[in-house]
Length: 273
Image (cartoon, one colour):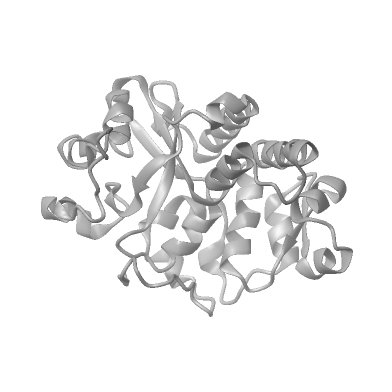
C-alpha cells in the first residue's frame, strides 16, 4: 500500500481500479456486500441504485441539485434523492453507505433539518458538527461483552494495550465497521496519519459470527436509535480519535509492535490542566 505524509493534502485516485479495493483489507466487507471488484470501470447510477435495492432513497445526478438550488440536506429531505457526482470516490462510498445504513442516514438527514429549523442553514450547531463527524469519519466499534475493556483503553489512548497486547480480540470480540464514507475514500490511498472517529456500540456475544448482512442490519438499527438521542452525540466518550491503520487485520505494517511506537500517529491522551 502507498504511504503518504499526513502533512500532504489527500487526493483520491483520479481513475477507477478495483485493485484499490481488492488489495486492501479495509474494503473486505464492502467488496463482499457489493460486486465492486468485478467492475472494470466506475459503477453507474443505474448499477448503484440496483445494489441499493428497494430503498425509499435513490441516487441521482448531482446536476439536479445544482439546478435546484436548495441546500444539500434540504434537497434530500424534500425529494428522497441523493445527489451523486459521477466517477467520484467520495460520492460512490456515500451512496453505498446509504444502502448499508438506511435508517441511520435517514435519521442524520432529519436531525440536520431539525437543527437548521432552529439555527438556520448557515449556523453550524454542535449537533450538526457531530453529525458531520460521524457521517464523514465514523468507525463503529462493535463490542461483545468480553471486550468491554477496550472501550476505556481506546478512549484513554492506550493504543498498545488494545491494538497489540490484546489484538486477538479484534475481528472476534471486537468488530470494526466503517460508517464514514470519507474514511473509505481516504483508505484508497492509506497514509500514516489517517484517523477516524470512534462510535462504540454494544453487541451480543457471538456477534462476529453472524452473517454479514445481519450485522449491518443490527448496527443500523442501534446507531439510528442512539443518535436520535442527541445527548449521545454530545457525549465526549463518543467520536474519540481512532488511528485507523493501527487496527489489527487492516494494515500489514501493524503486525510488528514497533509500528505503534510512532507517537505522532498513536498520540497519548492529553493530560487535563
